Amino acid sequence: MLARLAAPVLIRAFCLGIVIGMPALPAGAQYGGGAGTAENPYLIHTAAHLDAIGATPDDWDKHFKLTADIDLAAYGSSGFHIIGASEDGPFTGVFDGGHKTISNFRCESDFNGDLGLFGRVEGPECRIENVILLDPNVASKAGRYLGALVGSLREATVSNCHVRAGDVRGWSFVGGLVGRSDGGTIAGCTVSATVHGWSRVGGLVGQCYFGMIERCRADGAVSGDWSSYWVGGLIGECRNATVRDCRAACAVQGGFSVGGLVGENLTGEIDGCCAVGVVRGDTNAGGLVGLNSGGTIRDCYARADVKASICVGGLAGCNGPDCHCAVYKPGVIARCYAVGPVQGETSGGLVGMNDRSRTESSFWDIETTGCIQSAGGDGRSTSQMSVSATYLAAGWDFVAEKANGTQDLWYMPAAGGYPRLAWELAAADFNVDGRVDFRDYSRLAAQWRQAGTAGFVGFSDLMCFADLWLAGRR
Image (cartoon, rainbow, N blue to C red; front, top):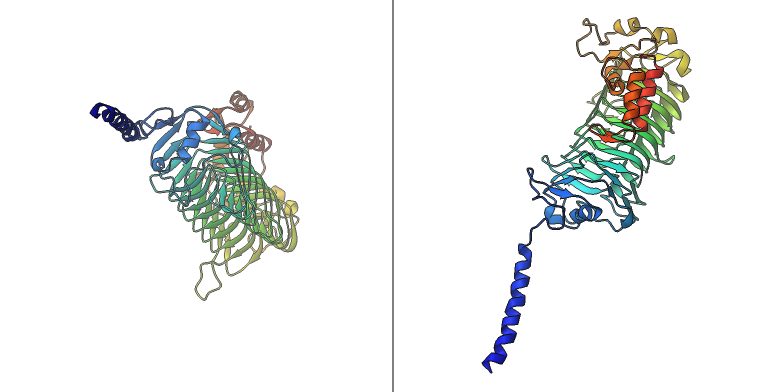
């Protein structure tokens, strides 16, 4: 009798031992190796490995590295587990894309927000870097915080990340790369995408609230309907943030506060930036910024075709204070120029409307803008705008001169034309010889559509090269 009872007991004990022992398996068994530490990150080789990160919230504070190109097409529009979510907590770890490509990410929802490859990303030690997204599509009819890479970014860093042929559509806080950045840093990133929304819509970021954006580029189409607000080629709304050395080359369309670079700059700082392309809006539309509300814009230019109903400017639609209070911070525009055509009521070659704010040492081209008036700046002929003396007399800091400073912010193209930002030359000077010529084109061709330390080499780089080549820097 004892023998007959002993066998089942032993079997149950053996099975219980297996169950108890299962959690002792390595935590990273669902990945391609590694331990999830900074020195030994989890390795991501396949689409299943990447999806496993989103399915394992306990690992969202770990380190990961992508080691192979990945195609997510098989997951469709709802099968992939987004990394970081409002219900399970944000991603707070480190993800290194290794300059590999992640193709065909799809995410669609009627009402959900915090959508992107990473839904929510948070923390000063958190980083996402060296990621290249090819053909990502993110859409939510009434969702907030949508981006191809990150839906909502808070006090974290995104660097050297790139979106190619993206499509992002949502309701508000919609960006080609990041939906909303709250105190975050976005550096060295580029986007080529179609972005659509109703409020706070940007080619790179829907809204940047505090924090920093630097050395970023966006090209493509950014739009809202004619009742939309805060639509910009790079950023929909820049609020108390710093934007430096950035460029947008987009077709931008919206209703109110529409800009080639930024829809509204609310007490933010925009330094050394430029915008080209087309801007269409209803009220407060500008080649660089639609509405500058107590913000500072320094050493920038716009070469966009701008058309709107009222408050239209080659650089800024309206330059005004941060509020309509008795005590306010005025908007400031300094050492900027605009040369693109401007059409609309209450229009100006540089600034459409000025409200208790100021413009210093800035110019617009009377001939190319088609405007003989502006609410700020000084009008000049095309020939006057094409000589350095015009700007040197106004205190602009050029390469190879010392009287106006030593930062070397501007340079004049060798064959003439309007001044350009010094960092633009470096961006197209692939062989670093101080010129843009066929030797740089050869370098560009050799790296075409390849992933490298500067991201995915493609049409944005070709556009930058051709732009400087045509300007005569050869």
